[in-house]
Image 1 (cartoon, helix red, strand yellow):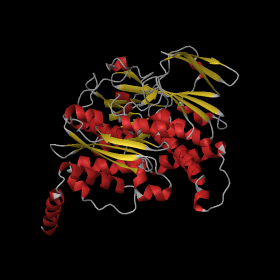
Image 2 (cartoon, helix red, strand yellow):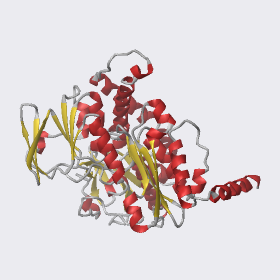
Image 3 (cartoon, rainbow, N blue to C red):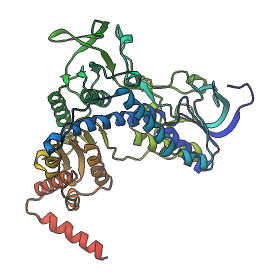
Image 4 (cartoon, rainbow, N blue to C red):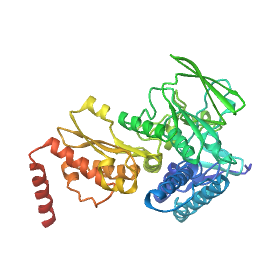
Length: 484
């Protein structure tokens, strides 16, 4: 940090993750002089400590599972083993390549954005001035906060004995046993990956089921599959009492209606969600307030309680996935430069996780849909489809939830190989407001995993109109449109 006069910018974006990159690029392209400052490396958590490195580990786990299938196809091979330091080196190669090649770095530079990388933690010196330890002071007409989130700690005795998913980068080898506390998306991914690497894994969820925000059938199927693969899934664990040292490494003590239980492991990983990463920002100097959960308060235009400060991405606590962060970054920048009139549009937001088996979803769960709509539900099991049988990946299903009145697709839920890719197709149809009958007429290639969506759509269309008139009507409409 220098004591010279601050450099003036129309817009200063704090944080260079997906939201920050999108916001900076949008602001610059709208003609604003723009600076982007980031505490650590360019790319934020998504590139350096989130989806990119975790997906790289998941790819290693996938390769191990595929190698174990080789004898089924008459291919000789030895049992695979993990060289963890070499794997982490590969993770480093991937994250570096992603930062340099695919994260808008060239676009930002071409648009004239001034990027301050590894600047240290930014903080408000006053309501329009930002400072950090390793970058010049910046004077901003408007500020956009995109500092993301950080792992939520467990406030129990002995929590200092635990680690977060970020700490797996510092391990020197795959631990012989692992305890994962918290069975949301991150926890289930960590458990699945290290189970494939050979750790004996306990996955502990204090609530009644893992993946509580997912469709119930999804969480049940993933729990069953993980149990079958060797993960000890503990649901309804009750209260986390404390952690303590033991000969194995760390012991967890938890209490439920059945009494107090203990679980031992070499490493205990806490994945209990995230909180906004606002520590040290000195938000009070700018008049920015947080809500009761610690997230930055924003209105429909993503403006904070300070009229010149906007926020986007995980720091707001809304839609905490990469593609939502990007959308929010664009909207926040648009409002910062042109005036706060743009509202984040409603949009289908697919989510998923690279577990074994994968799972993904878009739209409403079956339970939520039934509370507000007359619904039809069509499910196709993977073990009834040629491609999963060919690949030896029969575990899973594809489910569509349909509004009986409008014939609209309300939700899509998939468990199984390529689930994350499959749900993207359904999300496209939902975003286009495509009736399920029209989706049923899409010619999916054979044999593919996408065929599961086509078959589910056909089942739903038949349920809504068993006479088959739907097929003729929609085909006739499509033919006429093509002729026109």
